[in-house]
Structure formats: structure tokens, C-alpha cells
Image (cartoon, rainbow, N blue to C red; front, side, top):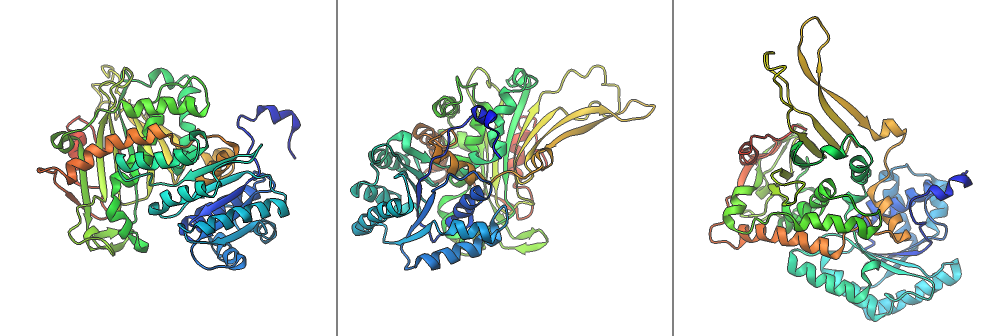
Amino acid sequence: MTNPFREDLVSRSRPEPCTVVIFGATGDLTHRKLVPAIYNLAVDGELPPGVKILGFARREKSDEEFRKGLEELNRKVSRSGHDDTIWGKFVDNIHYHQSEFDETDGYKRLAERLDTIDRDRGGKGNRLFYIASAPEFFDVILEKLKEAGLNEAKDGCWARVIVEKPFGTDLKTAQHLNEVVNRTFHEKDTYRIDHYLGKETAQNIMVLRFANAIFEPLWNNRYISHVQVTCAENLGMEGGRGGYYDTAGALRDMVQNHLLQLLSLITMEPPTDLSADGVRDEKVKVIRSLRQWDTPEKVAENVVRAQYTKGFVDGKEVPGYREEDRVDPESMTEAYVAVRLMIDTWRWSGVPFYIRMGKQLPKKATEISVHFKAPPCVLFNALPGGVPGANVLVIRIQPDEGISLRMVSKIPGTSLRLEPVKMDFHYATSFGKGSPEAYERLLLDAMAGDATLFARRDEVEEAWKFIDHIEHAWHQSDTPPPMAEYVAGTWGPKEADELLQRDGNSWRRL
């Protein structure tokens, strides 16, 4: 039962009933992430009453066939399990609409069907369009929505669009897609999704920094030695993913969006308020302040790219990257990237930031580690080994969501010996329940009109400006930096270790 005396304490706008139209509804994202996310919101009582789902795709399917496929996968992947009673009520609000993405008549029929759903099932006329199709269809879907008048909201209602990643493949294509989107929907109604920002630990970064007096005074170049952002994956190109990945690579697939977004949350200045633009204004300042590696020489000095060779991961032998299915045997696409970044602001002058992302590493994990400078150790210099390491604050994004702080303590006993110890906080154990999936929060925010956790146009374009310099040095330079190698199941190439060693640092072992 809701406590009426706590209603005014809710810090978010209320999500409103709407019809969610998912383009690319027969794809993996819809079945594994989007529909299970909406179902879990229903289980938790977070979903506004009257939400409908209309899948839009090219395959011939009936409503029943579409629902059956969704149910089969929901039973396997739903965070909260599968309750037949709840699903029975939930599935009545799911429908399917068949059309080619470039078929004008299909969008006219879509408009008519949306009106019918609203009329027959008590809808209010709010529409949330989710473009989960292949990227080559983004433009045509947006243009056809405008052609059918579906981008214009009815009086007293709203029409919004969520655009999946990748949002462009370089600055030029991102600018073009932004122009198409902004010709179709207002910027305030455009939601460029980055599911990493929906993760509970990512959302907690601002709280950790700005609501705790023990951290904020130390969050600058006087006390912080360096920061590492790691995204490790213990998978390769399974499931036919090689065809897509070999055209993208680690830099464009992960660094341009997810990892630069995490970096901006770690390094941004305090916003004037918690409004969407208040937060995003500060994030984009960080991206603009990145020192540009705009020559092949600077890229070679500050960026390492690599591919994995045959090895063992989780006890199983795996092929090298160029031996993977649907990967060019002479591919020059990186499966691993490590970048040294500098942020030219007053707060961060002189502090190096290191980002690494790789496939076929020993484990799956994403974390941010903030390495503090060592204090003067004159008191303990005479001890064997001195002081064993400086303080490190670790923010675990996935899979074991939480925060830990490494500090130094005396080992119990009659002699003075020091050892690092860890203070650990786990979301699941501290709050008694697991964190919701990222898509749950993001879908709810879009229904509420809260764009705080979505990327703004200028954020996307500034990130591509930085990434494009590196891509040009790799693929368009007469003297491109070399492609390094590492054995699958190891933590990456020796060149990535040397990148940190030049600054007197080393990668944190996960």
C-alpha cells in the first residue's frame, strides 16, 4: 500500500500511460530486453495503467504468434521470473503490426491502428516510438513517421522517440541523423538511449560524489593520482556478432558512448540542479575538454588497439579474432582498445584517465577505479615494504554492483605491520533486493518525460569529434599505429601495460 504522506517526497515526474511502438519488434533486443523490462515494471507495480505495446516489424505474424515468442523468452530472461497470472493480464496489451520500414501505407495503417487501440482500450493518445531496428533503417523510419503525421502529438498528449545505439558511425553520420531526428521530433522529445546510464551504479555516481562530504573535497588533481574505467568481456563473436562487430570495433561500439558517458559522470562539475539539461550541460563540458589526439603520432602515443589470438577462456579453447565467424581474415578492426585521456580543466589538470575495453578477457566486469595519491609515508618508511599501496575507490557497474574502498590498516599482533583492507558495499545485500534492469529505468523515464539519463545532441557530436581523430589515424593515415595482439583469456596486450607504466601506473586487477 502506498503511503500518502510520502507522495510529495518522490523526486521524479510520474510516468504517464502511453502506447509503446517498437520498430524491429522481432529482434533480439525487443525479446530479451524491452518487453521483459516492461513486464518487470508491471510486476513491481511501477508501470502506469493503460500502457500498450505495439510491435512493428517486417515478418508476417499474428498477435498470438508474436505474444507466444515473447512469452517463451520472458520465461528465460525476466529478472523477476515469470508469473502466469501477471503475464496473462500483461499480454492482452501487446499487439503486432506488419509492414516494411519504407512502406508508406504501413505507417498510415499504423496511425489508424493506434487510434483504434486508444478508442477501444482506453488509451490517452500518448505515443512512445522506440527505434530498435538495424541502424540503416533509422532515417527512413523517422521520415515515414513524419510523413504519416505520427510525430505530432494530439492536444493534451505527447509523442516521443527513443533511438537506440549506434547513433551514427562517425561525426558526419551522427550530425546527419541528428538533423533527421530534429526535423521529425523536438529535441525535448528525443531520447538517445545509452543503457549504461540506466544502471543503478552509474546513477549513484553523482550521489556518491555530491552527497558525501568525505569525497567531494578530495575529488580533484590535488588528491587523485589517476582514474581507470574498465569494461571487460569474456565473450568473442558468438551468435554471428562478428558481421556487425567487424564494421564497428571496440572504440566505436563501447568507448564513444558507454565509457565516455561514465567518464563524464565521474569528472563533471556539480550541476546547478538535477534537471535533464542541468546535468547534461555539465557532462558535455567534460567531453569538450578532452585533449584531442589529432595526429597519428599522438594517437600512437596515447591509444593502443589490439586483436586477440587463439587461447582459452573459462577453460574452453577459443579462436583468434580473425578466425571468428563472419570476420575478415585480414581485418584491421580492434577487439581491444586502451586510451589515455587528459581533461584540460582546472579540476583535472595533470590527471591521466585510462579507458580500456576488450573481448575474450578472463572475466566479464565493468568498473571505475579512482586511485588516490599516496600520503607522505615518513612515519612508516622503516617498515618492511613500507605502506602497501594507496587508497582506491572502486565503483562496480556490473555484474556485482557496489562500491568498495581500499585503505591501509595495521595487522593485529605485537609488531607493526601494514596491510590493505577493503570496505565493501553491495547493492543486493544492503538493500535486500537486486537492482532493476537498466532498460526498466530508462523506459519509465521516457514515459515520464525525464531525459536526464539520455544523451543530448551536443554530447553525441562532441564524443564523435574525439573518436574520429583516432579512427582517422588508424584507417586513413599513411603511417597508422600498429595493431597489437594478446592471447585470448589474458588481460590484453603488453602495449596497454606500457601505456600506464610510462606514467608510473599499472592496471588494477579485477
